[in-house]
Length: 197
Length: 197
Image (cartoon, each protein chain N blue to C red):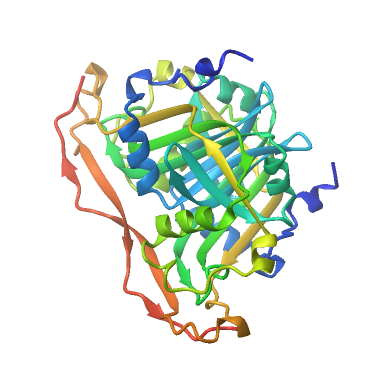
């Protein structure tokens, strides 16, 4: 295995790599769900998790009943990624057709957060600011069933694709529309529901 | 390692598991980007990929210059996931606050697709139907730089969370709004761009 820096140096399209911590934090703060990759019995898994950011760590939680979360809690290597899709980039060639995106990949090993309530509040505030103060806080039993993990953002790569479509001399004769179709995640009108016991 | 079925049996919230192939295909057809988890030198990675579906396989592509894609092409075990976030589920307790989502997780080993053009067209049609017929098709050199992979959907788990917020007797006294905030990915008005050579 190479030195840490080599694992997160961007080899493909290195011109898209960004080193600004403000960009890293902005992507994490704008995302809702991360994917955490973990190996169990030689098989990789990617699991979606809600998360929050506290300074230069990300926080996420899962059930103590989950074997993948227990593996993470044991300090197994993991990969935490957030990918924000910003649009389709429509070039004149199939090859240069691509996407606008902002992505974060953090490698490392998680630590178990013992002081769970502030960490869970950070995750809740990330998803819907203000909600934590209104809801019933977790009971002792609920906390006992919850693993809260922290991953320090030390070995990180950030990529931002935001440029125009690329063209090459071979595209001459293909007079097609080129540009970007932007994507946006909209939060719709809240829908009141009957609760279920 | 257990029998294949045990790796994709849903242990957490098994009531959300769905066995209907139409639901599986519907989720894959509605998504834009998948996450592929792969192990390299003992470290798991999750990489975002555009993809398409051909019958009961998913197809995706990458650069021959990518060590992770070369590892996938060599038949290493991988995990292909698509996660569609449909909304926030706001319960009266922090513990029962959750999300509506539809997710697919497929485990297996990829095969290299030799007949690349039809597979790339399938991926292109998945992302923007009709575009393939308008753009310059890939050149021989571009095809040589592209790895196209197929993963059969044989070992798959599908989960759909779409229910109302849960409540428990402990929530009495917390008179807060409960329901769902729907998420929707909107494609905005196309923005014409100058191309870049």
